[in-house]
Image 1 (cartoon, rainbow, N blue to C red):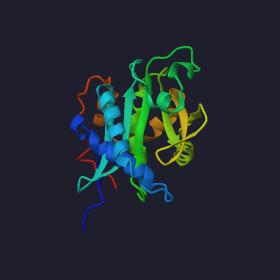
Image 2: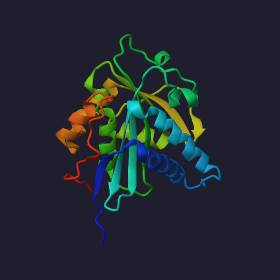
Image 3: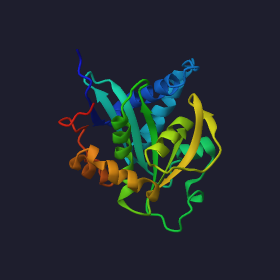
Image 4: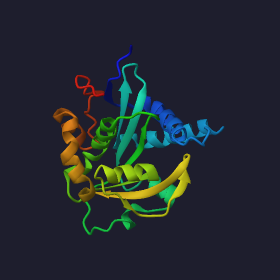
Length: 226
């Protein structure tokens, strides 16, 4: 019988195609009335090239099982104020105009968050979220933007992440998608309550500036989780 243990891994540039395939397939798998469209390879290609463009300013984390199969993913991007973020492409929302604060340190974008259908693992959900929000939680004037479906928005509220809806929903990748803002204040309580579920060395690595890509390829291999 195969082990059900999983481990976290930071993807390298040549592995981004695996992320794109996982995201497209899981987005449609999670909506039972949706079949994967004939143009799904085009959608995979679009995500692949978009994430390649973001790669120098981003970190991509996945959870894999003992066979190396991806069962969860998330990406954190530090905005360079030049690239067009998904929230701009999908909703026409310009980040600087959606910020209520007078003082901003760094602006981030959280994306490509997906967990394999029928996976019942709240720790997996929390670990991926901690990976993504750790850089945001290093300064009180940081903020992140993201797009999520209504189910994920409810889960975020249930676990204590106070996402702010900043626009009307749109249909995207098989579901109703909602633009949200995640300021430091909405994340810090969840971060402090749950950061111990990943190791201190991993937290330290993630909290370094995103342009210093010194994170080891495999994280927590000695600390698998169920």
